[in-house]
Image 1 (tube, one colour):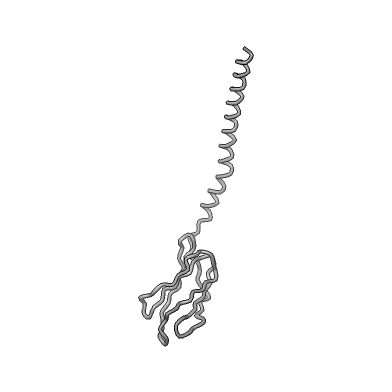
Image 2 (cartoon, rainbow, N blue to C red):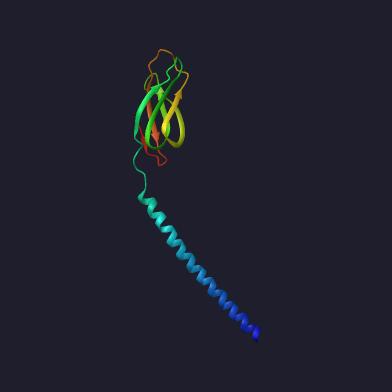
Length: 127
């Protein structure tokens, strides 16, 4: 008889502990998750990187180095060509504000067109 009472008491105690743990878990999820979700919504990036300080450097017969800066972390892409049908040179990492791309295999003595594009990790594109 004593064993049945002890088993009943232990079962009730175990059930009570499970209920308390459940409610603590719900409270913890609400308390620690909600501020992060709100912060992410408020910090949504909708503006493109500002591209500035564009320089053409290290010009040789067959290559040229083009550098520029952006006001936020972004990738690096240059469209270039002898006319406005551009080719592409790209560094796809969103990890820099100082950009540098070397364009090679250029024809000597020719004028090239180029367009710089930098895109941030949110997909906003500055040209």
